[in-house]
Each structure stands twice: as structure tokens, then as C-alpha cells.
Amino acid sequence: MTTITLIPVSSLRPAPARTVTSDIPQRWPVEAIEALYELPFLDLLYRAQQVHREHFNANEVQLSTLLSIKTGGCSEDCGYCPQASTAESGVEASKLMPLADVIEAAQAAKDQGATRFCMGAAWRSPKDRDMERVTDMVREVRALGLETCMTLGMLEAEQAQALKDAGLDYYNHNLDSAPEFYESIITTRTYQDRLDTLGHVRAAGINVCCGGIVGMGESRRERAGLVAQLANLNPYPESVPINNLVAVEGTPLANTAPLDPFEFVRTIAIARITMPLTMVRLSAGREQMDEALQALCFAAGANSIFYGDKLLTTSNPQAELDRQLFVRLGLKAQGERPVAQTGQCG
Image (cartoon, rainbow, N blue to C red; front, side, top):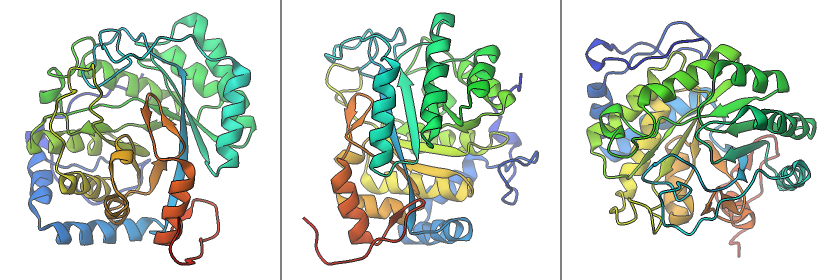
């Protein structure tokens, strides 16, 4: 197993950017990340743009589609999640989807332009009896020519290896927040539990998708602490979803005040600066953002989105609206030709 532990912030030192596969960690103290948050907004975006353009086509966005293959009834008590068994959100528990339905959804996602298909199950961790079914899903979706990603909760080493053997490209397991804020949101699993799962995923040779949620009532220093934990993983994740809390009725965080939109954009920019080679994904909460705010996120270095009608149990902008926005911004989906600007859409 690859062991991942919390990094004491007092021991961190900044270091030059490195490839994702390097053994030399890029060290970012929380204080250095806080200093980035304090920069004038336009200066921060300019710096993030410089980093982004050094490593990526700034007008290209990777499209992922996320399907909930098993919804609701999760035994965890994550305060933000309508799928927790303790939530009164009205989300009904379902059984694991049939393989044929998953393949149909994956083909539809591919037809709409997605290049990565993510499958999420509301489990604390998969049971042994579930592993054959989910590995079959990985094989069949991959056979369609899509990258595969799964999020199934905590994994043991042998489960991670089984997913790798099936051809899984990415495993998502978010840290959610900074360690010092974590216990105010979740009590049923520890921060180290999450890091242990990431260690199993790394040891199996699967790419890591790992991010967090902002806007849960955390302080700016705690937001900086989350980015520090992500940026100081060795190596940092290949994919980093940044979620803006969707305050769902019936969850403990239902009445949480919305995060300042510019603070969210700052977080995107800082993720880009501290993790130059990662795919920074604009994730949950995007439907609550107007088009101008989404454009700022792309300018700040976001280069991946969830694309389609649903994001697990919270709604996501429809694919057609996304395509119209891409036309207006002159963006292209990864692997496609640039779209032409033809005037106003809609």
C-alpha cells in the first residue's frame, strides 16, 4: 500500500512545478496559499492564466458525464449530501443499476461529446459481492472508447487492484475539506480513512481524482488548508473537482449562506497555480452560476466540467446550454475542432 498522511503545514516549503509522476513533492504552506487568496483579483487571474497556458490549450475543456449507478441510503453522515441515510432530502435508495442501463447511458454521453464517463455509488465502501458487477461496468464502458472513472467510497487494496485489472482509468475520492474543518461536516469516517483509500488507488496504478467542496461555512484559511492538502499529495491528483456547495433541503447544511462567487473563482485559480498539470474540474454548483461566472472560472484555469443533465442527485446544466456557451466563448471540447463564433445563441 502507498501510505498517504497529513502533512504538517509548518514543514512545507514552496518548490518548482513538477510533472505529476515526479517523486519530488511540490510543497505549499497554508500561509503561501492564503497569500494567493489575498492578491488583487485580476492579478490572481493573470497569474493563473499564465500557469494554465504554459501547460494546456486555454480554449479547450474536457467533458465528463457522471451517472449515479446506485443512489441513496448511504450509511455516512456527510452534512452536505442528500444521499446520506440521515438526510431528510427525499432521495430514495435504489439498487445498483443493471449493466445494460449503464452502457446505454455511457453511449448517450459519448454521443453528446463526453470523453470520460464517471460512475458513482452511494456506499460507505463496496461489498465483495458488488465488485464483479462494477468491474463489468468498467470493462464495458471502456470498450465504448470512453475514459472510465468510479467513486464507490472507501477501498481496500485488493478492491483497488480489481478495478485496475478491469481497466479503470480514474478513481474519485474527495478530501472534501481541510482536516481542521472536516469533523464539523462528517463523523462516520476519518480524514485518514480518505487518505488511506487514495494510497490504495495510487498503489494500484489508477489515476487519482480528488478535490473538495467550498462554501460549507469554512473560513478562508480552511479553504487554503484544503488546497494545501491536495497540492501536497505526492503526486498531486491528476484531476481536481472543485465543488461549490449545493445547499439541499433536508441536509444539515441546507441553510448555509452562499459563498461569495469571486471567492469561488479565487479557489479555482489557486488550484490551477498550485497544481499546474492537473485537470481542474468545475463541478457541483455550476447550475447556480450564471454564464459570466462560469466564464471567469474558465479564465481562472478550470479546464474540465461535468456535462449532461444530472450530477448524481443535484441538477446540472443541460448539454445544449453548455454547447451554446462554448460557442459564445470560442471554447472547444477536448478532441474536437474549435467551434465557430456565429453570433448570439438561443
